[in-house]
Length: 155
Image 1 (cartoon, rainbow, N blue to C red):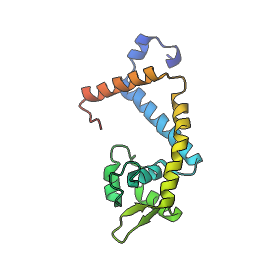
Image 2: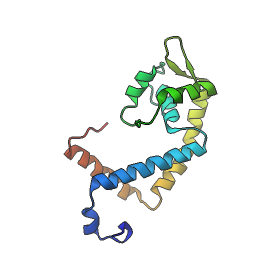
Image 3: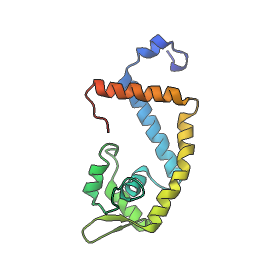
Image 4: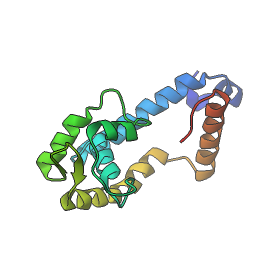
């Protein structure tokens, strides 16, 4: 059976763990490849976002690597090395590190973070190509219910 030619009954019988795992890996790989073409990594972008008062950071205060790992625990991947990623951002001048090991976003880092947002609609557009918003919303609702049904945690 190929998914493109499957009936609704055949699709409904597919194991959600397998299909959602394939989707997760494909989407993350695609996003990371797009970001690499633009000269940064996904963990670097997350670091900038978590340290920016104009994004995820509620107060703009610096954070240590362990604090950042905790803040990103819902989406960081096991292979992501936040220390190495932060070191690269310090070298670029996008982050600074104080005497206590706290990382702080610089003005240049903030400018880069804000500029990256212009690329997000094109990346999202490629991922969502051929999928209307209603179908996407239904998919999210279904997956969210499956998370609830299995005792998973939602943000």
